[in-house]
Length: 60
Image 1 (cartoon, rainbow, N blue to C red):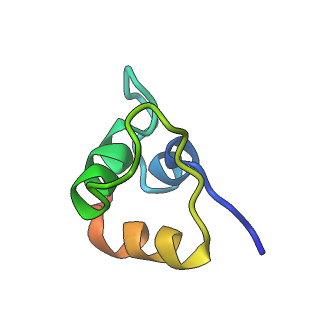
Image 2: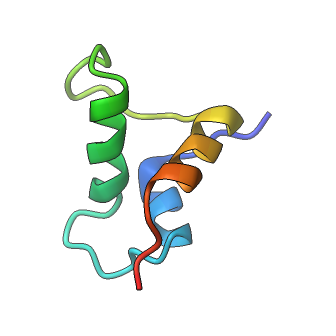
Image 3: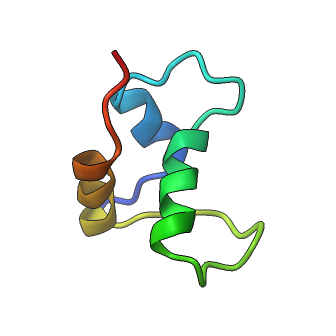
């Protein structure tokens, strides 16, 4: 089973020039999973990564 991190998914979605890599993905994840412990690292499984890909718009 593969795991993913927000910065990796953000790059895949075209967010390559962010000052804080993966922030757009983390912002989405915080809304979706409000009970995630603050400052804890995000490690996403395949299902969560697919959800991010489906709901975070690609950068144009």
